Image (cartoon, rainbow, N blue to C red; front, side, top):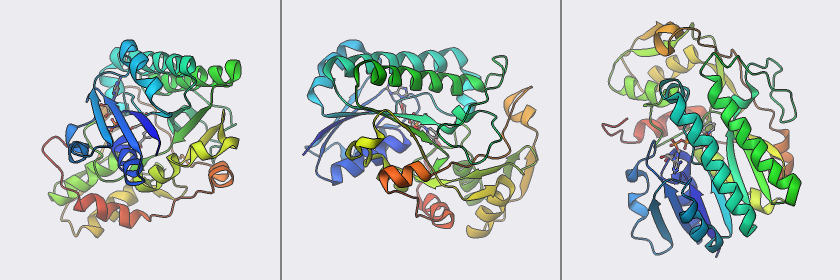
Length: 323
Ligand SMILES: NC(=O)c1ccc[n+]([C@@H]2O[C@H](COP(=O)([O-])OP(=O)(O)OC[C@H]3O[C@@H](n4cnc5c(N)ncnc54)[C@H](O)[C@@H]3O)[C@@H](O)[C@H]2O)c1
């Protein structure tokens, strides 16, 4: 039995990872400030003897000094997430992302605890070299366009964590997640699939931003959680960046049509200009496909859950009023 610390464990991906580790017989401590996560995501775990939740910010130095030495491995998922949130609260999001990682990795380094950081495909920026390989150049937009603040902050997280690996060989793992979807994800912060599913279930219009020809790949959170738990057993992944996601592309318009068809919905599709959704000067990428060779080679992993199943699982999930 191992003892894991998960920052952001009350969030969408964090709560699934927590369940997976508990189901495998391990002990898990979650630190989450519930800024975008929800207590309901982990409430059902509270009675278990192997589970502990601490509602606090993961940049609390005193708390980390006390907790990190008690744990074998740290998953760092806590982060401001979603383009919409970053655009609406730029100061808090950038500060929170970088400060939390800074304090956390410093404390992990002091106690020599392995750390896995969840980064994002946003780091590839506007690159049009498809698929995105981990060693590809990144192409950032200008600092005057707010969406790039998220990518830049997460990239700084990566540099910081890798710096500890280069300087003292702290065992670190960096995972660049592509669109991850499934039960418990909320549409509140601009995530497309939960927004579509919820609208379709209510027979309300599905809002497609831009012309809907932009393509994305969607991976089930169950596949992603299954990959995250493999890292610590892969010595060749230490100090490396690894993409995780699906490489099956679908346009956002086709996604909307698929959701309507699968859920037998009477919803219509409406197209909303990016400016109306995110304000003037919004940059978006036409395509984003991960190169998954490294994940396959290092983790012996590839996604297996089809998009149709993911959509049905999402629809079966009870959306509460907060979604
Ligand atoms: N969902 C995706 O498609 C996706 C894609 C790329 C990267 N990621 C990354 O995966 C991780 C998890 O994302 P998610 O989709 O589960 O989002 P989420 O918002 O559901 O989870 C993030 C969690 O972190 C918590 N949190 C934020 N800042 C905190 C802090 N300073 N201290 C303590 N808790 C804090 C939030 O309350 C939330 O529970 C993030 O690092 C995100 O950048 C997710």
